[in-house]
Length: 313
Image (tube, rainbow, N blue to C red):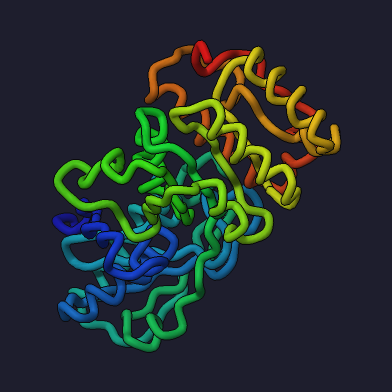
């Protein structure tokens, strides 16, 4: 069995944005891989964490797929995953059809320092599993305003995450037509409209927003529309502390409540990451979005303020 231990990670091509908004994205990527492997008649074992006790790499409900030559998803990596892949491939080579469950104490049996224990369920993948596959919830829905250098860098990072994005700009030719050698994935929906601030009203409640267009007056109109809605989960505005002060003065003069304005993050990005290169700003900004998506971080993020400048704006 040793020849089957090393797994090739399966990475299917991401679907193009025109091939179904909300389908085939990282939100449901493993289910899509399962459906594809079934369609291609690839004999596959579905592994699922059915019980997790103590400190473990992944929680209950986590799944991965294993064929004789490929593996997709992860139950946490390390020795546990190596042994799970080995067990799954034993089932495949011996043509075992009955499901099985194996208990793994991570410390004593596998030498992992987590110290907990997991129970894994192994079963041959069937159409029944795909039909009953639980829907994954996106981390957040984002309206990303601006297709300039920073907007593109942020969008590239978001292609790999289970999120949904409306990427909005009035300049249709600013959107890159390709991502490396492939098209943009379905969960990044590009929207070119003349009155971009009007898109704010179409966002679901508790949406996230990043405002980083090519004009200050446009940033101002978009941010004001978001603040007037008031039901945003996160609002980030690119710029300096000076820009923030000017915008805050304008919003206060327009009658927007100070407590609402205080929730606006400007500059964007988590603290401690220096640099004004678009890619650096993008990493800091996406990390901040992920941080804001964690419920436990809500009080801290409302009280905190950015202190560095994203640009000399």
